[in-house]
Image (cartoon, helix red, strand yellow):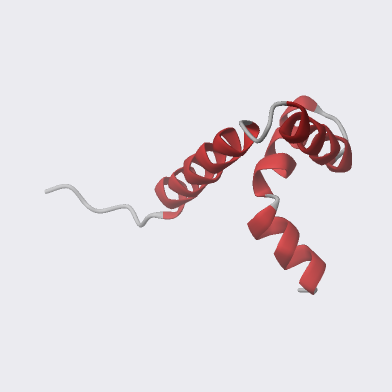
Length: 70
């Protein structure tokens, strides 16, 4: 996998996820996020960190092995 793909998957996963869900280009979501961060003096960064945490928990739950219940 190329470096750009790895960076986008790990660092920009939240923007990519939102873009796929609402059906717009990922670059547009990233641009709006950057604008919102400057206009609101950094408060969307909190949203981004929560989004990263949520996506990682979701990926963990989705990929965990199924344990047999006895």
